[in-house]
Length: 611
Image (tube, rainbow, N blue to C red; front, top):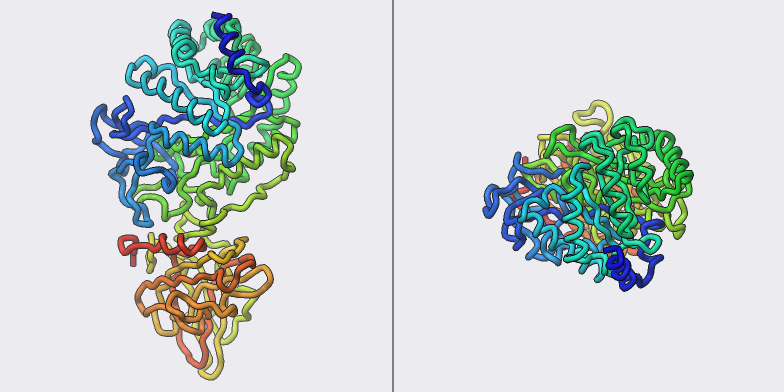
């Protein structure tokens, strides 16, 4: 058998340096989402919700789901998407979920990796379920499917087992089956290190698993004897045999070729990440160097599983990518150039970096889901793929190491959208904060007391969801113009010829029609003074008046026609009207900045409205 492995490896070794795991950013890849009707042997809903074998019922529905983050489904082909029993998305699309089974789904994921420069994946294989013939057949097929996509998109891959320590004979039989029947190690894109095919064993020594170090050591030595480079997915407390590690596993850990300690959930803040560097990364690195072991630290973007196992929503916040980036910064600052991301497609526990719902618009109307913008700043659906791509460049020395995230939160075509719903959306950056571009003149607070106000309110009047932005004040002069402006969102959006703005207004009186959304550029110019007009040819200046009293109206403007080449610095709301005394109160909702074609496609339907 050893000779067989050597022969297979020799035929596959096209570019050993390119196949190595050191100097690479690898993502854990589950590919375990199934939908009834997807053609897989599983024949049920799996991982989106607990389904019944050979039945489309029960479908994923409110209270019957096992995932936290809703996927961005916009790029999947129709053949990869399946209808759920969840309510429509807030942008009126049907609530469908993708299956990992179709080759098109796996191809799409690997195309994202290629696009963003992510090196490859560790394909997850759970040993226990292979005892079920149905799941074994499915997982076997995924080995072949993932190999096809890896070769098509030139990404490396290797098998990563999640297993218990007392499965010695069972594991050997399964691996011999993979080795001899499925033969993934023959692929030119199967990872090799020091000329040896790579395999990862995850879970040995973890105190939630069985405590049998002799069995663990026997498996590692068996694999090494067959010519494999063996990575150990080990507990964070592996070096001291404490915390999440069984004691007495030192010889097991030292037997691996590379150690990859599990970090997910071991800290939950930037300070915690720094403490983990001091307490774990630094001494781990020293131990590995002294004992001839390679080291693959784990990075994760955040964590939550409230829909599955309870706990708080957004339990370990992503902090607009800063949580992920601090971990990357700590790793690279220690001179490391290798890392493992947990995970590429883990929508279950909210650790996913693949495209996910960006806002309230992209989740269902009857169930909470985590979005990329949950921390109150608009973050595009692809942000964490782009962040992982930047991390790859930093690890390889192709980009400088920075202390904070430097890539844009969003890119074309969708630059910004919000329904200002807490826990889902970009909520406003400033509350009741006058914008310096306009001096408040002849305007007081509503009913004449205090100052005018601008902030988020709930359950008053809104177009989508319970929240909206309320602007209210009182014009006090019958002979002069009244002005006020409030800044609401801090952004940095380049404007091209195709950029458009869309928002909804609900004026409660005639004077309230003189409130509108405005944009201030980095050069100090504004949309209101650019000569721009809306879809009806009405000036975008607030003094022109917009909307219908006591009704929601959508306003759209192809702002690129007037602002092409400029950069939006902040989004504001203005009131401008003259020679009239009275109160004004206007609600603003569903602000979108995007390519004009996308703005048109995102016009919200009546079912999303709520007054």
